[in-house]
Image (tube, each protein chain N blue to C red):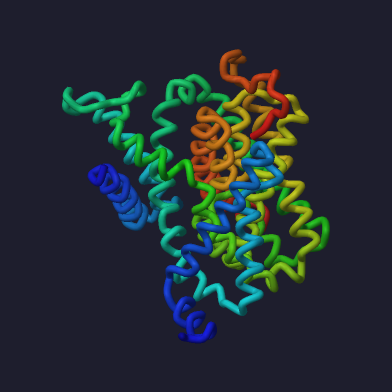
Amino acid sequence: MLNYITLIFSCQLAGELIVQFFGLPLPGPVVGVVLLFAFLVLNRRFGKASQKLDASGIPVELAKVGDALLSNLSLLFVPAGVGIMVHFSLLKNDWLPLSAAILGSTLLTVAVTAGLMVLLSKPNKSEVLSSGKEKPDE
Amino acid sequence: MNDIQEIWVYLSASPLLHLTLTLIAFQAGNFIYRKSGLNPICNPVMLAVIAIVAILVATGTSYDSYIDGAQFVHFLLGPATVALAIPLYRQFDKVRKSALAIIVSLICGSLTAAGSAVSIAWLLGAGKLSIISIAPKSVTAPIAMGIVEQFGGLPSLTAVLVILTGVLGAMLGPFVLNLMGIKDWQARGFALGTASHGIGTARALQVNEVAGAFSGLAMGLNALATAILLPILWKLFF
């Protein structure tokens, strides 16, 4: 397990270095995603045959570490969110246009993006929200 | 026995207090969120932030001394982002099949996010600094702040607008999707990630793995698309 924690940190570190070195307009962790993805592809093709892989070909222990991090992803935004308390004075001047812009633009973006995704992709019956559910969420 | 004040001084100097406060507040928020049947209105990030800000203000604690403890949680955001490669790998066959839909929706979504935010703010008479700072509001915070800095906006205002956008998209996005009758998990996840970055992705992951993978993908791609498109638009208009 520790080796996979190290792997994830190393991907982030390498991502940060690549971003700095090439001056890319991306955060280091996003490049880290590409690196970890490349590891998964290469590991499945060239990795030891004796290693334990799950159904989709991901090392079991790595999947455990990753799922533990991602199942609590919301928590990780809390400290940055609390930072709002420092900046409320910045919002004071233009609070009405800014809140209207956030509200209108965010909902419009959701509608445009989802609408185009549905229009352009082939319908896939098995991957939809079940209509029998009392309250469609997400 | 030490008096309360001494204990308080001791505790507030150690990172343990605010680290624990963050965990407790989030778990309380999550408890309400789960009790509500994952109702997006009860977004756990929003509930935890409100509770913590209230406590910090009531006890006269500065954000700096709070973040001394909470930075340990904040730090994990990087490794968690890297771990998004795992759901993406699991769902990659689906991503490949929808490549065209993904590229077109991404570019249109990215332009809608920046264009409509800037237009609404401008129409309602926001100042120039505010208009610049809101342009990349749908992009994950470190990128959005970098973009705004380039144009002479206020990165700290952008950080606030980004967080508000994330929480609002995660809260109200699902209602828009339901209203439009969109049931496809790929489309739902992709839209949430494009409009409201990591906070939308956190929400999508909790509800469905396909939605989570597409949302994480959208978050990364939108960061890239906005970082490339906004400077081009900026040159065209100003």
